[in-house]
Length: 268
Image (cartoon, rainbow, N blue to C red; front, side, top):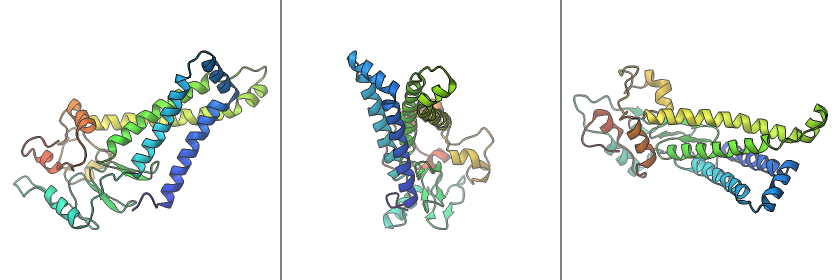
């Protein structure tokens, strides 16, 4: 699976970019938007509109970074196979049966085979059609950061749209003068609610050190099936979970088997 060459991914990313900049242009080129810009210019306060455009640009860059980033694919070459072997601890009295994938051979703990990407992904969370990529160990924190920036942009844009409506003598006249802005505001409001729910759910799951897949399918996952409803072998407390997720150095794969069996020192 190559996100650069995926036709579906190209269409999704193109649609996202077009929608983002079309709404931004509507907010700025609408009559009320022009008046706000002139007002900021006259008062020498162009910082706010410039900052808004920069935030939009940052959100688009984060979107492409997350959608094109390797989420933690487990490779089948020699290096990948050796890496898989290193991640599997020696058998102990508490060891579970080693997990295997029909496509990717050995399957480290917390990984899952994605049918869309055709790869096993470390610390698999979900396959996101919005970014046309998996969310996994390597790009999950960037996905959450993208959601936070995107929510800030959307709420700011919603405020601009709400304060941009102009008064009119009748509903027909009001719709004629504000129809385009109203459509943009409705789209922004819907996207804001969606992103808010996504961000909230991901922060909640991160605070528990669990993933969307583990939360939804724990009854079918071998290493969680025997755990109680409120038991999570990876949970180290909300503060440490959040610190490990956002601040732990990236690059090297986490040996979740060691965390699961509590062997050795703290690996993350």
